[in-house]
Structures are given as structure tokens and as C-alpha cells.
Image (tube, rainbow, N blue to C red):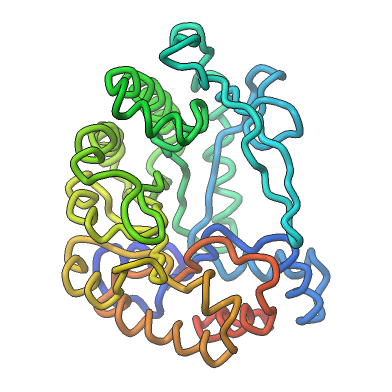
Length: 356
């Protein structure tokens, strides 16, 4: 099978030639350096090897918006939402922590109508098809784009604690904010998919709604305040003929029925170290209606297990989640700095994508 055929067969709940593979959120820089040294590769050689393992490839439009805004992370410079993030070193890698919330005064000193929200016009979509053709020049891959994280984008502008407070004290204001964010993502994805002319297969969306021991908020609160915005977005995406991959960390078993009802086709990232997250229960109860992506623990097995532990977890996930299709094997999030390179190599090898 081609990578695209393999992924699409799994998403139809058919058994592909082998379980599709994804590196998910990738391997953080320090872990990549250690892995390259362990395998005897240069960083460029390793990057090429890693790219060759992926059955799913991502494409994005090019940013052409105001120069005072950026799409990524910049030291002291606001991103497209007006959020500023600063680099913080954790002993292995640099993470970009929030330093400025442009709507921190929402409901008090700040009004939504005074904030400049991004526009799809800030992006150039003309090279989307060219990028896809380049990706598929030697093989045919499942193509994805993303990410539509409505709740997260909203709290990035407000602040996390402030957002949770506003959900109770100013629910109409939060609703209006998330409507604006949803409008933006609908416009961005519609234009991306139009430019791709049927060549995009998956749209990655997200919103972390779980923590280690349960949901971030009550299930009724999620159902009332967050879910409807994703329903609106997902209806547009399904009308365009794509599958929806939805990312959330944490203990989210209580929300899975609602996520399926919301229109999610693929649940990502499968944090089985979180309370109540059980791969057997997940597959048996929801496997006929839902596909899965992730599941190899970046919390325990990869960083703290032995290579044989990693191999066993890979086999277990494939045997359970991959039965009769419906599974794309991947780490449960980014592989962190400090993860032993022999464990990373064992993960790739046992998943059928050896790096050597």
C-alpha cells in the first residue's frame, strides 16, 4: 500500500498492510540530537530518515500578514492573536511560555471589538497544491492540515485561570469570543481546502479538555460552552469531505461519547497514563465509531522504560487499537528531551519503521 492507501484503509476500519505510522508532535530538539548521535547520523540525515517514516504529511498556507504579527513564536513579538510568548529553558529544551495575554482585561477594561483578530486574508493559499504535489512526487501520502483549537486559542488571549472564571461569570462574553475564533478557523480551512482541490484528507483540530485525573471542567459546561463551536466547525469540514482528527490530552473517557457526537473521526493523543484511560475499553466501546492516533507513552514508557518495555507497549497498542483497522500508531505527544535514544529507536523499529 502507499502511505495514503494505508491511512485511508485504517480510517475505513479496514486492516491495512501494516499499521499507519506518525511521529505526531515530533521529537524535541535535545532528544533528536541524542538520537542522531546514537545512530551515527548527522541531524540532517536523521531528519530525512524521520520524514521517510511518516504516512501523514502536513501542508499549510504561507503567512503574508502584517509584519508586526507572526504565525509562530517570537521573542517579544506578538503572534497573529496578539499573544506574546517568551523562551524558557527546562534543562533540555526551550519551551515558549505565555508572557502577554492581550485580552487579560476582558469583561473589565478590555472589549472584544477593540481587539484585532486575524483574517484568512493574512495567508497566501496559492501554493497549497504545489506543496502537495511536491510531497507526493515520489509516493502518495495522506495529507493533513490544521489546527483548529478554539478554546485554547481563546484562553491564550485571555489567560487560563481568567478563562475558567469567565466561563462562570461571563458565559455570553466567552461565547462571543469563541465564535470569533471559530469564524476565523472556518474561513482559514475553507480556503485551504478549496486550494487543495480535494487533496487534503485530514484536518487536525484540538482543544485540551482533560488533565491527569479528569476533565478541566464539568461535562455539562463543556457540552454547553465548548462543544457547539466545534460542531459548527466540524460540519463545515465534513461537508468538504475530510476526516477530523481531534487532539486532547488527559483523562477524557467521560467526554468520548460527546466527542463522537461532535463529529470527531480520529481521537488523538491517547494519554493512557491519565486516570481511567484504558485502551481496551476505548477500542471495545468506541472502536466501531472512532479511530485512534497516538498512545505510546511519553510520560512513562518512552522516557523511563527499557527498550523491551517500549517494544511491548507498541505491540500491545497495535494488537488492541489496530484490530480491524482504525489506528495510527504515534507517541502520545512530543518525545521529550532526556528520553533515551535506544528507546526511541526501539519504538520506530517495533512499529515497522526502523531508522537504520
